[in-house]
Image 1 (tube, rainbow, N blue to C red):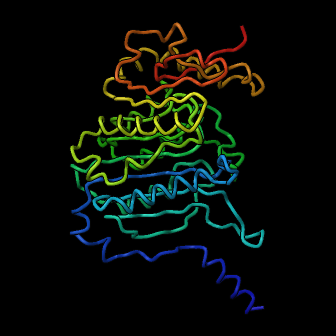
Image 2 (image 1 turned 45 degrees about the vertical axis):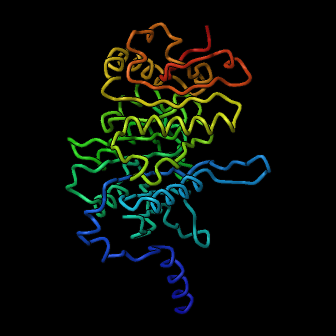
Image 3 (image 1 turned 135 degrees about the vertical axis):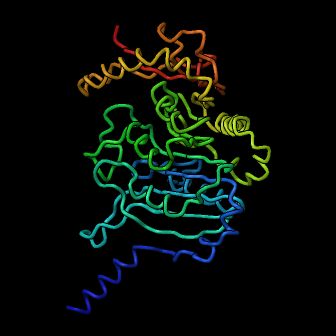
Length: 357
């Protein structure tokens, strides 16, 4: 009996930390002084992210994103990169839950630590992710370029129950992401660039809420194929961002992603870059009308949600303001089929409308 218990405990313990911390690198002043870029990447994988290519090969979009993030980390000798992969919950021998988060920390192109951890199992505030960040982050470097990346499904602005397959009763919304971001930043600090790789990320509420933590945001106002924005441009930042011009870099990043998507798919493609200083006037002007819409939707029964749909804010009279295009760079191509193929441009802002007259 004791032998069996020992084997079982040994198996369970092997599912914890994978790589001891490389302390000689982590606590080296020389190592910290070389860091010029700080990237936090959260990859949501606790959902249906399986897709097939033209040859029928099966892939998982979150695994592909995680692999890309690790490549970015290895290709940046002057960066620290935090990768949080939120995985579906699994069990050992059907009864024993395994850790459902995996953390990677790279510094100067070298993997410093890789640990499995428990995600929040109630309301998600990224508690453990924030703890890892504060533990390893290179502090007191005010000239460091900082970035935050989120890869996953559309983040709901209301409701949000069932976002995680492993926690079907738990809700996750934009407000929860905002709550988590508070732990990754200080009161006065903002990320130089935020990349929101999800569908329908370019709404007035989402951009306004996340804009409190970023100077420039890249997002897709409409459907984003596989919720995937290319990370290739983040490799070798010492070359791709050597001039330190983050807004220009963001536009190049968006353009490259747009070019790839338009080659690969036939549906509508939209990628937008938001300059948060310049979009404030529009956001303030439409805040009340958009908030009223969200409040109405929050009060609706689930079955009535079939009567609403996403749309370009420019299609609604209340949003047709002179400032709607201020601070927004939009890369857009209509679908090759369906009713949207006649739409030749997009404002970069996504809203809701009722489909029932």
